[in-house]
Length: 174
Length: 317
Image 1 (tube, each protein chain N blue to C red):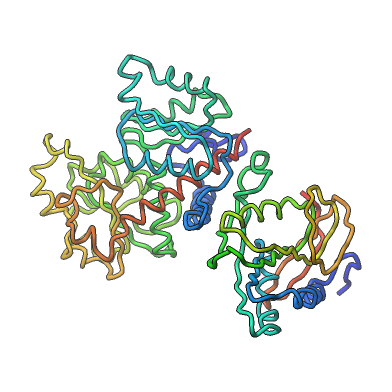
Image 2: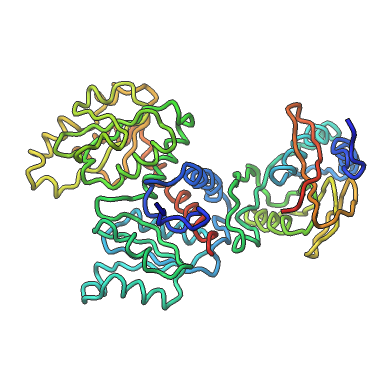
């Protein structure tokens, strides 16, 4: 199988993200993944980060920010919304917010707005596998496994196989 | 034939009836409602989708539950909400439906939620409003009550997720029930294999079996092994006509008692769209019992109405 050198290896990036996040864990940390890629990453990282910090009891949640998106009036409601699942108290938590690809910053804006409707966190750290550049808002990830310039026409799409392994592919931007 | 509820691209423009609504749209409404159930459990029970929009509830016919849940749903979507009980206002001064609607449009309303005693009223309004306005039918005569039908289906799906393996019985005054019609269309579109109606002949529409249901006149036969027992309200005014002998007689034959419920599957759920006539169509012991999901129906009604409103408002041309 030939691999496109432009396409990063998601599993390698996941290990790198784990190493970068391990020193940031504190007792009141919660891991929240944004649907769907961020949620997959959060699911994989949670046991590894928990193992590295047996004294901290980490909690896990997922967010779908469809109800907060700024393109609702142009594009309508996303046809596939999934329930956000945050069953712990957000108040005073140190949140690690995970997403697969950071691009314009609009998804993160929406996700943070939703998060604050659950309560007032002590802090939010944004961590992503890929920071592809192109931000349109004053928001940027504190932790990125890789920085990569991609042309507008291309979209980096994360998928998950039957063995729970993550893969990136390049698609045309809609 | 063009479906008057859909845009040229096949998106939902108005919600007037569940009849002829594609399965994909029904599923989108139910899935979106699932996400809104969680919103009601949060610290802040609001999302900003309809911020800056104005929703007008126009009730030409009285209602408490439907009106209130539509109002809560719109407010939780951050819309501005105006509720008009037109039966007690300008209609009694002789204003036509269209004049009422045109006046509200001039006030920049974006969505109308309409209840009317005449079948077809919501269709009529939908045909005449400006293209950016959305209309939701909150009950028109005997015709349709799509959000009630959808919230009932949503409740069923929450308790019995395998829709392709279900037996549902709808019991009571099917003839006058817009709820029953909306439920039957939604259930059959979603692939529920067996929908039964149980009622005396006088309370069933002619050729009801053409809707894809099985007809029973005897509760003891019809309730056997069903997963869902859906009771309908018996409207008191029906008692005065020749359709029924008396409330007591009706309860004896078609009232849901613990003994009759025992014929259904042991884990069957009991539903009722409200308001209930205790001791006429349902025994209090059943209405308040462990198998009753009548109050969850009300709670889910808000989530389903939020889903419908947010899908419609997002589909503006």
